[in-house]
Image: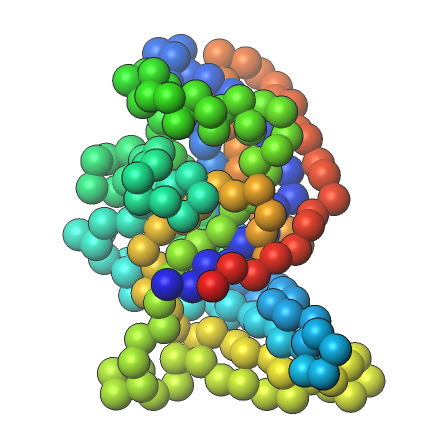
Length: 201
């Protein structure tokens, strides 16, 4: 499983019922640094192309989870449970998740919400697999970076199988949004922080 992530800001709101409503946005066609190459290697970068996750996103019967830290032992919502809705367009993958009152009583969910409120869990990261070449020959491509920009190898993911989206502390990409909405309020509070970049394999 591959993990990539990004963030820009967080917004927290609560529904009248007490359930938390979160919205996340993972933009496409942004470049992430996966590795600086160390002392002897070449830098590696990655781009996830528009609608790269469409295969599973466009099939409602395919369950996709919203997790804490890519751990299936710490789920927050899922399509199968009816608490996760995912939309896809050329610019971004967008999801809406509901954390029910019952889930808010679970210890790891309380821990996540505390970390979220403290500004420590601010990232968004998709967990995906690249389909085998025998089924999708051009699912990913690798090319040289423009010499005027650097010496990196750039992998572009054109098609991938999305299994989960996670809230994380240190994502790889530079932009994302996770919003948690209070539907009783007319306005919301937005927190913007400078991102820390990391690629997780």
